[in-house]
Image 1 (spheres, rainbow, N blue to C red):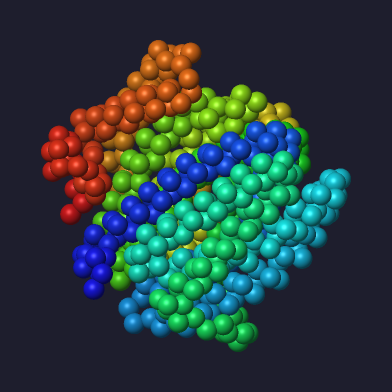
Image 2: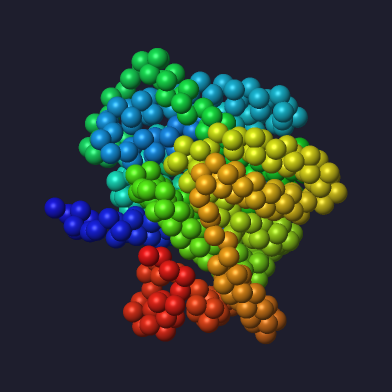
Length: 495
């Protein structure tokens, strides 16, 4: 029996979530290096084209999911489920959909961006194949996360980014074009997808099935969820596409840099909620209410300090990631940083709806938010550029959260308590004030020292304010000395 198998269920959830969180933070650091190299080698205009290609194909990757991944997570978590059949059907159907969508990616890009050079089409065709490798990675990951082995997923994610970084360095040394950077991205995904296939086959026997009725049955069940997910994710990514159409590729580069700096954090709440899925799906209503409430509180606390940090440290973040030529990305980054705690809260409620099979009415909420997003972007982007796109996303995130919360409460009868959120709110105000004062005092310092010193101060003030408000979550794995200092027994109870 391995060390992981000897852990209790609660500790497995903690290990799985924290390993994926830690892995994602390491990936973020590698990502800073990758962005630093690509932005300096390509410049704002060509980096904008590179970011456009990645974003455009990512939209189609969402379409190939059609809710299959979330549905697979839920079904694998059920007691007595035939994991081999569920995983094999999900893998086969997603790969089949991904192959079918490749011509659509290339064809639609030729129509929308017909004024671009031939090299743009070549890069788009290369990137289009990535939908297959991303699908294999995503479905394989469900087998490990449901078994609370998030450390395996985070390890493979680190390998992926490491391979990509090596490819980027090689392309930079060879003074390659953005097509070569796209090829490096795809090659890293291909290698990791093949390795994950081998690993998951050892865990759960996979059988490639071309049983179209089984595919159709799986897709038919997942489609309502898929429609909601596709719409909800398109509204987050469509801003970049609209900036590329309504403004210039250079301004798209500014928005993409700000969006990527924030978006890398958006996966964090998903790690916790995926780990909680098997527990929630088999729990009694009162326990579901407790779990969802605690997840909401913990993630808002985490999202609060990340949001404040991104707002105060926007300038050093941009300078460290891309250099002085990308300084206009600072204002969009400040606006987008405000979406972090909202997005964390939204993820909790959305995952809870999926787990409890109460997500279909959310399709209308997602559609209305997407429509509002497009209309607002048509007004905001021509006048305000990347900042207008960021303001639009912030507004739609808030509306989406309120709409999702109302639907969840009405359908499930469960109460998600917001009355405790004043505690992290108070801590955010205190950390924001201290961070701004420190930023003024550190004026003229190097970006790296500003980031380290002010970032540490923001974190310390945030924890101190949260402790004074008796709001430090008991679930956070704090050292014993700090745990005694913050008086966890006085925090909002988790038990």
